[in-house]
Length: 254
Image (cartoon, rainbow, N blue to C red; front, top):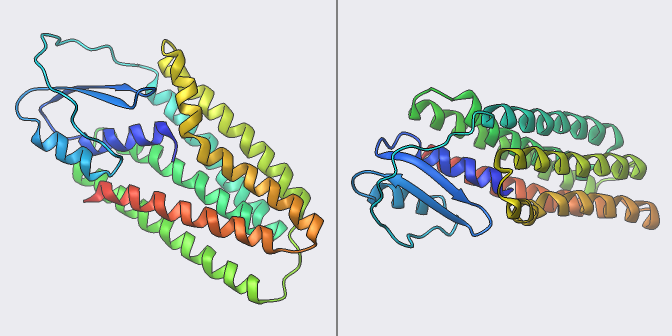
């Protein structure tokens, strides 16, 4: 999952802890400053439970009580959610039509990102219990789809299936790659003063980029080798990544 997704996961996890006044994310340096009152034990425990490699660096007193909120954050998240969900539908549809498991798997990766943004948006103003229920449903739904994908990969691996349409695989994946770039650009608008954020986010969105490039390469190999195996291999790899993302979402429901 990309860096903005990790930030949303952290915000969701810490939501409901009344002692927290503000969260200040330093993405390039992978640091989070938590402005809070009272004990830090619950905050530290919640962050560690996400298994993102978080640990407390230091704690100190501050007189700061006012914080600048980004009024456009919700609008930006809506834009990213719509783009991700649109490409989930596009890739799922073209993947089924072209018989490409790589595209189907990549569509689930897009759906995973949509879930993260959707959980944050649709549960705004709701209770922590409500948000955790939504996270649990999203995680299990994602795992179910990935398992169905694995079963289909096995069926095609041992069966006699027609070759996937390599041109569709390549063209759709190129557009998905562009879409990821647009999402990244949109997210930067919320932190326009942090120029290094673009570079850091490029690193943390490398999984999505690698997946898109992987499907493109698989499409080339399908045509070159006249075999569906490259498509099945990339599909399997992406399904594994999707399940890993689903388990991370499920952590929010605990």
